[in-house]
Amino acid sequence: MKKSTPLKKVTTSLSLLILGGGIALGGNHLINTPQSFAKESFKETKVAQVDNPENEIAVPQNYVSQVVEKVGNSVVRIDASRTVSNGNSQILNDPFFRQFFGSQIPNIPQERVQRGFGSGFVVSSDGLILTNAHVVDGSDEVNVTLKDGRTYEGKVMGTDSLTDVAVIKIEAEDLPAVTFADSEKLQPGEWAIAIGNPLGLDNTVTTGIVSATGRSSAQIGVADKRVSFIQTDAAINPGNSGGPLLNAQGKVIGINTAIIQNAQGLGFAIPVNTARDIAEELIAKGKVDHPYLGIQMAGITPELRQEIKSQKDIEIGTDQGVIIAGVVPNSPADKAGLRSGDVILEVAEKSVTKADEVQNAVSKVDVDSEVVLKVRRNGKAQDITVKVGVLPQPQQPIR
Image (tube, rainbow, N blue to C red; front, side, top):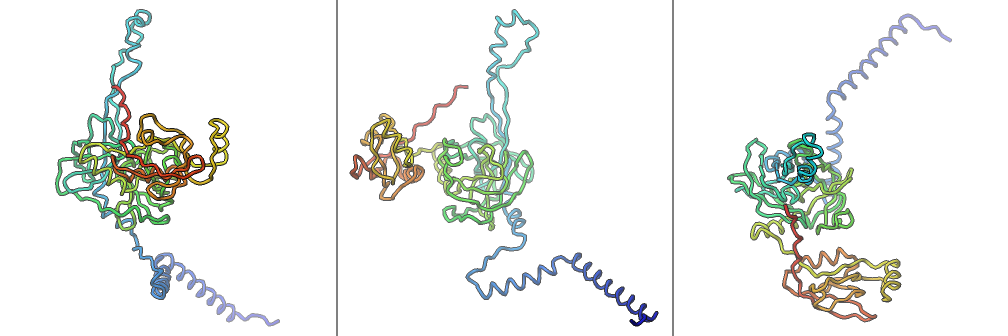
């Protein structure tokens, strides 16, 4: 084996030093210019898109910032206050108790002010604002704060607890209004951006995707609502309620709502098409007349068929359709002759297999109009015409 000469050792050391320096310099170049690799990859991606134009998805770089810049000034903070009674105050202030406890019982006022906050967004330049009904329902005072800090007194034009939509009016002009998308065309996987004031942190932006559409009220545990919700993984917390859910173009696709308990990692929004229809009625007359048949219903399952047979001695001879479990006395359904045990096969010539499909179909029928239900009774199909009524308003609690 040949011995290395001092010259070779120096040359080798210099080579290693130069090579090491080259790696270091190269590494430093990549670290300090992280977009260089991205640019090359982007060029390759663009070439692939040009070769396959039908597969091209045009999403601008930093699109979230562009959306926030475009829509951020339209999002508002809503502070609402309501006066509620202290249920225990009358008992504690009763002279009978005071004769025993005297001054040990503090003087408790009979009423207290309850404060809450939420979000909303401007839908017209003259001061119309959309939000959730539960943000302002029952409020004595509503204040609206714009992003630039200006605060206005808000007038509640109407609320609809069944869809959780409300409209507020402030006396202002030249406000930046949002634009709307068509929520009927929304597809799972699309980008979703939520802007609002979660937990009191104003102008917070969260992002995600549309996880699903058409989530029924029963599926997510709010059976008192009549909404087919948008599901998203964009973070929505208390305070986000009433703020907009936006697509990648900055158009509103829904109203965020935080009424779902324990929905960690899941958010829900009211489709903007539904919200717009409700808002128009609220603006016109301050309330919404919801179509009403007056039936209790459920999808057919083997367990339900067996239960109905054993309890009511009714044989359900089909696995398709929606069974009527009960009919409200003196309701439109009762007057039309619908009965418990009838199986709804179609509503307005459209097949139905789930209870929410019946609900959605009926919700599209105008009040006082007629709708034809194809039902199966005693093994035979027949058409029954029902004149759609108005859903009775729940009684308001006495305050």
